[in-house]
Image 1: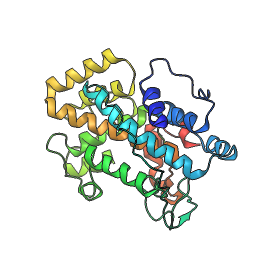
Image 2: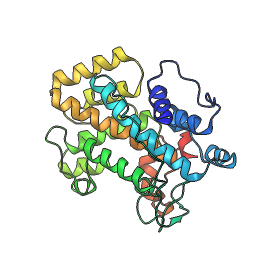
Image 3: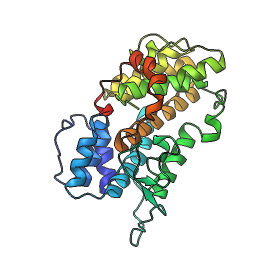
Length: 181
Length: 112
């Protein structure tokens, strides 16, 4: 909840801290902050620095999963002019800690992924070390954009935007966010 | 992906709309879509309201809402890519070189 709250507030902040500032003095929250607000400034060097300081690589992956599943509905609500949705109540009990059966280092990502690595696109395998985060990501992608099966057909659309119009939005958003990938 | 899907659908894409935010990409409502994506990417609420209204008036409320969903999806996917160091296979570099140069993305910090 704290990570999601930091991500939401960082995304909406009117006067954010610059990317090199770690405003919380807490590795998990600082990673969430930078990813939510300054994602295009994250480098492999910074990832390695945070891991060297003691964060487990799968903790990093989980933070990415929480941040992206928070930002997406917040961005949508803001875009259409609706109130930003609140968070659901936390569930009772301990975290389940579910991981992929076997992990592997990846050539196409900094983070470990489900084995075998590099058999699919890097963005597809990115969260695969943690199946529930991976599932959240692709459920959101299917509802907001399209499923893998729909992606294979360049003429598929929702009946509103055409595929080229969707890709224009995707491309310009990626360019504005200075996302190399 | 824009160039590919544009060719398949018979609507060729003009990459200036992606690279510089100029023009309409050769697409219906293209200028309104680019302005909407840029306004979501910025933090000026008045500019976002204006861009939202302009798109909704031009293309309809349902179209604007679906456009917002697509942008929200790429607010998510760009962070997945940036947060996990997503890369293309080295063997595809030659195929992407022209497009990367046109989009001027090689100098992005996220490429490091």
